[in-house]
Image (tube, rainbow, N blue to C red; front, top):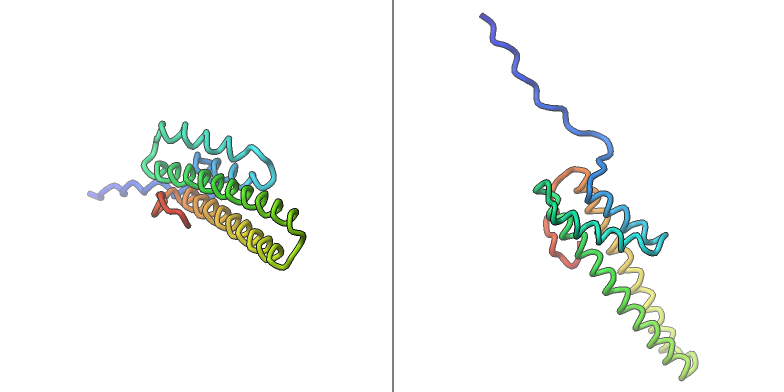
Length: 141
């Protein structure tokens, strides 16, 4: 008597997965083109984190909420520095120190933007693979 064939495992999901962390990551990336999509993303992250339907999503929501607050904090610091630098350049004229400070501020903005894009990309990749974020409370990547 032959044994019945074992039931094959379900096929692995392939293609694009439209899950909560993917939507939020896409909204964060859209912030570079629209103004308020990050606000929508962080609200969704807070709402969906309470729902927590799958284990791997909890770390994503924590990571994405921190990404929002890190980005907002960096933007506020950059804005304060830019206004302060602008006022100081206006009072003194444009000197070499002002140009160097402006270049340092521009470098800071670029590094911050790259960091946020990298955090979003890492979250998107892990969300597509449905694996948890390795260190969701990290300040960097």
